[in-house]
Amino acid sequence: MERPVYDSLVKPPYDAADDDSAVSDCESGVSGGDVPFDEGDDLIRSRFVRSLMSCGLKPDDVAICRNNCSSVMARARVQSFQIFARAASTLRNGNANVKYAWYGASGKEEIADIIQHGFGHAHSHGLHLSPQDSPLESVNSSVVDKEGLRHLLLCRVILGNTEMVPRGSNQCRSSSEEYDSGVDDLLDPKEYVIWSNRINTHVLPEYVLSFRPSSLKGHEKIGEPLRPSSPWMPFPALISVISKILPPPDVAFIAKFHKDYREKRISRNELIQNVRRIAGDKLLVSVIKSFRAKKIPASFKQTR
Image (cartoon, rainbow, N blue to C red; front, side, top):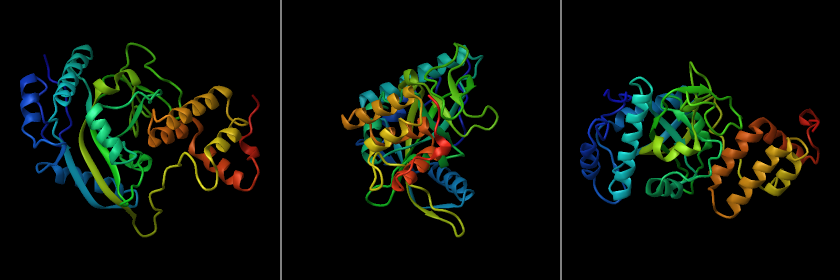
């Protein structure tokens, strides 16, 4: 059986052809969570910095830690990932199409929870990740913490056969058994979509990258993602306004995500990403600005 094809960013922490090597490599790390990675982190850092600088953004104080898979459950997740990578390789003519991808986190707490327990089940429209060399979307969906830092996870993902999934789509599973995951562009993807029933088998967090965002001269700063509420517009008011604009099913989804957030079933970052995905940034910005002016934007009014 052929091994899955991996990106050549760094030496994989396990061999896809040998389950025992996965356990021994995970056990070789220092116990107690993430540890600084001393082989390959310069390459990860340089590619990340280069990608953002090409967009006019300058990441400072870049720090990288490696998930050492020290717990029994973490090693089990590694082995599970291997099994599904082999299965995808067998199913897809020897090519599991395993890539590196970024996930923008809401803070250290979310990252710690993902490392310990895996991704939550709140991603009803799939987990959206950015390709390794195009991290901007994940950077923008991350949240600045009290120390002024943003935190991202660099994960291995099993893409298998990909299908086109337009941004903002409400698709929540593969359109047929022929496909395993989604991309926003078949030739030059800037977004990967891993469906909710495969998140914790097809996504393996390997590194945590933290940095302080700044901008190069003549460029805008990295924008803060829209928050669940703001001094300008409480979230219930946002739902009330967009209910006059979006189709009822979309409004119902947004209301459900807000309820899940208030009941602490999903993180703030997950709420933000879901609302932005359903409503779109252009509409949300226009609605918030219009709310401040006490006027709904006529250009977005739709007939139900």
